[in-house]
Length: 278
Image (cartoon, rainbow, N blue to C red; front, top):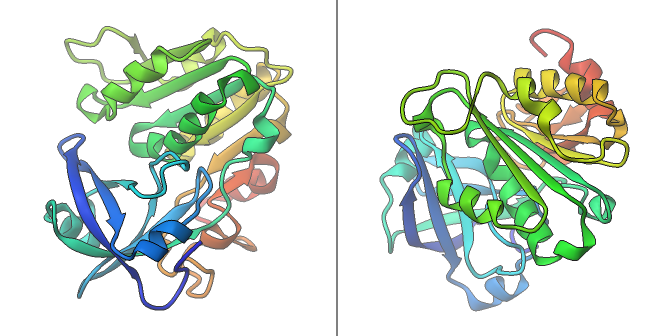
């Protein structure tokens, strides 16, 4: 790790990709050579992305951890900082602090079938995990990827899904709850298609990210299918303003999502998620 607090590292935008109407990806390169050399992250961690004079926002690292020199961040333009970042172009310099948080349990996943369930832009936190699996494919079992979006226009990463489809022993299920032509995949909610996964539930490990309602419903269905509750992991999203548990904005019960998460085991967080408004 390089910069977890204090002055952000300077990072140049080397490429900007428009993923959908409101979602874009910034590919960043740290300007300082020593910082580039020292930077390390785990799949599922995040950086605090800083826009000079405006503020910073927590964004998942959407990269292969073997390539630390280019750090991708997929961002939805919804607030003051993210709308400012939306205006940035190739060659602009922004700030970066991180990495922060607890990532996916990749060591626990070795030798097991993997279920990845996402919703909309929620698929961003699993990209680095899939890169990790693909580079070590023989160490993992079958992979089932289930992605749900409301509208066809909300689907991001179509090229990535095509590449994942070509991975060995990998099944892709794309779903939309409000189909519009052309939509050649599945319709209805994600939870309606979990029974179609070609995996061994008795030994599977699950990575879940997306809207909380979807994750709660999916976790319950997965347990009904025979997946052990301790094998279900969720990436939580809250208002993470500092990255280190100081400001308290991301607190959920006794946990701080930025420090204790963003990845939690279902057994840690299920009772808290059942409390309305927490």
